[in-house]
Image 1 (cartoon, rainbow, N blue to C red):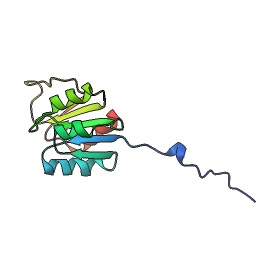
Image 2: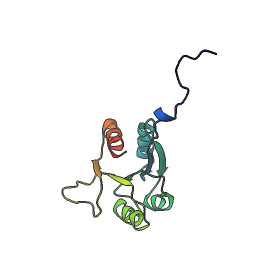
Image 3: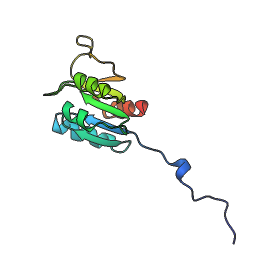
Image 4: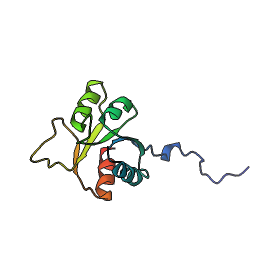
Length: 128
């Protein structure tokens, strides 16, 4: 039986997408961010900081979180997630000017609303 010298193995070339936990209280923005990011990562979308704290697990690589949300804001949600022993990369996204109101927690990236599609994708790619 002749072979062409190629292998059927795809495991070596398989790329594992990062898991992103997206916490955004505005339905329209959550849907837009999900649509933008779905081609490059696995998205878990939640409506607020409380859900982010309840949903986080060891599979989450990146937390993309709105800073200002009702019930539990992004700063406090990140604090609670880290206190629970999880340490994903964090990209905070907000309309709040960082120079006048810096986050109370350390974040890896800080995105200002409105953010472009490419900036959102580049941030997730860089944090992966």
